Image 1 (cartoon, rainbow, N blue to C red):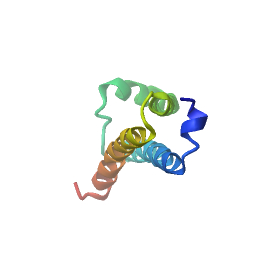
Image 2: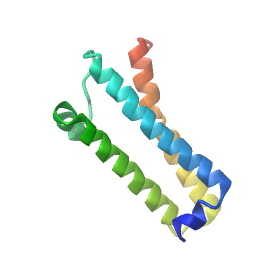
Image 3: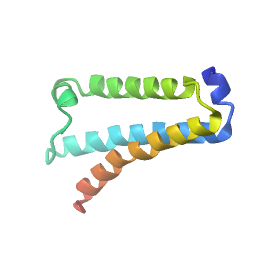
Image 4: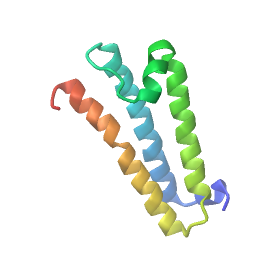
Amino acid sequence: MLMRDALGWRDVRVVVALFCAAQLLDGLTTYLALTSHRFQEENPLLSGVLDTHPLAAFGVKLALAVVVVTVLLTLRLRWRLRLVVISLFAVISLVAPVENLLRLTGVS
């Protein structure tokens, strides 16, 4: 199935938008946390890059999100199963920005 066909479904577009918004929120909250100098990046793959080239690290994160969406949309799955899989990815991707926000506000 082509991405264009998968994105023809309104519910798929909404879930993909939610996934992308969660990725952007994760990048923004990570940036805010790191610039406060109260937190460190816990991801060993990104910590060094974030210290030296933060925009490059966010570019890599964005590229990975695009790859994930592309793969999920082009899988040969029935549309309802594809929607469930993409929805799971969207919900799981909300964990990091919510956790970052809780830490920034001192709740967690």
